[in-house]
Image (cartoon, rainbow, N blue to C red; front, side, top):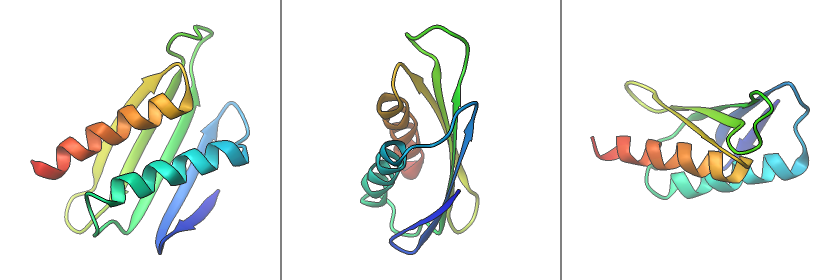
Length: 98
């Protein structure tokens, strides 16, 4: 499903479940957090996937940021969507300085 956050085209895709307004709000919040460190983001593709039945670490987020030049990609996982999103966004932020 496509959304727009501060003129950034955001595409959220879920695998195995339907997205809820709460998940969309978490993704938008994390994108705004990342935007504080990089202002030239033009697109964000977020893939949310629940893997297996282990509740300890079954939520995976794959995140691609469209920026001028090469796009950035990061993957994060954890027991909740918020921790998975935070894990992926921290990996993206580390790429900003490289």
